[in-house]
Image 1: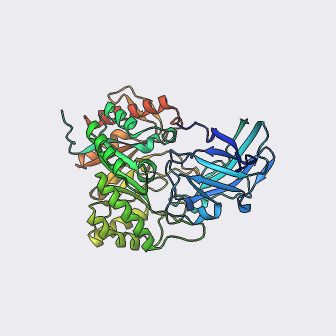
Image 2 (image 1 turned 60 degrees about the vertical axis):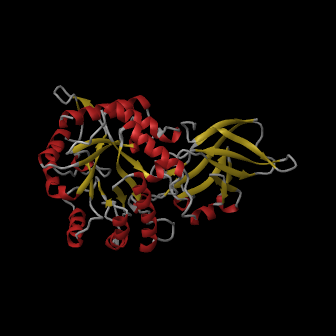
Image 3 (image 1 turned 180 degrees about the vertical axis):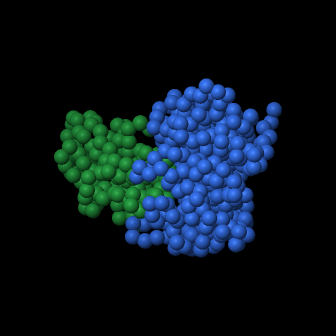
Length: 146
Length: 290
């Protein structure tokens, strides 16, 4: 079962390398879209933790969908795999040392393209403020990490 | 008593109505249970929203689907799918690529028992005109559609109204090509005087559908605001004149499914959603007499 909020509490955790040292963190989000677009139709943007920004271009942010891990560039070309509506995506962020114990406000910028809507409504632009609808979102949630 | 579909307009539900709660883990069986409660026997699903494993059709899903339809007396009324022309940020699908995606959907729809397909085309402007080469795409996909016995139906939806040139062009294409693979889906929003996003008010009168009825294979019974009504209908939609529309359909002997599409502001609330669906089915039942 998924949580009502797009940002899922369950799944928020640090990740560790083979020696047990924290090397980043993961957070899960669910879609609010009623259909499963091909990955090339998704728009993935920055991850924000408190005041720290992680950009997709650096390769530090990847998305795991149906068990497969993708960079933003790989997703932009993938017209065969979809993000199923009832499955959370894992957003994986590389950050040596991971996140410190305690509360963090985590946000993930994402959106999608809709070919059946006017092109004027394709508003996603990671360098601008999120629109909040029409396939351009920045859900945020304050959550504890152990 | 086994359900035998009525001849005439028939009541159904689009699983799209459940969109706000579907991602949380709602199941087709949940939806079919409520449809059976309401005597709504036709279902619309959205291919890439509601088929586990899409774009592949697994044996497990196929078996589950047919079992559920049988158990709950549900008829596959319409299969919603898309031609996602803007597949990539920097380029469009070619006609051949469109046909490849379409054929995969035709085959899947056929195996699930659908004949009507709500085929959303890629649009190019704010009044929802389709891509300029839509005729090439439909023509190229038509042999496969006929092979799988499906008909592609673009949806006529606000801010488009029935008087718009596009609708006439669709009909001219069907007539000219004597097409069995192409028709129309009319969304009842075309009859709504509710202001559009830009504040403009444009809508068609119910009678405007009459000349198009031979081409209309399925309707979307759109509704947003159910209000009490002190007459035999019990409820009305605040915007869409259901009694008049359904009378036109019945008087003109239209035969097909009207699948309910709820777009009320409160649809993320489970109770409000169920209440709205029930009120809407009561209204349609009281219009039709069944």
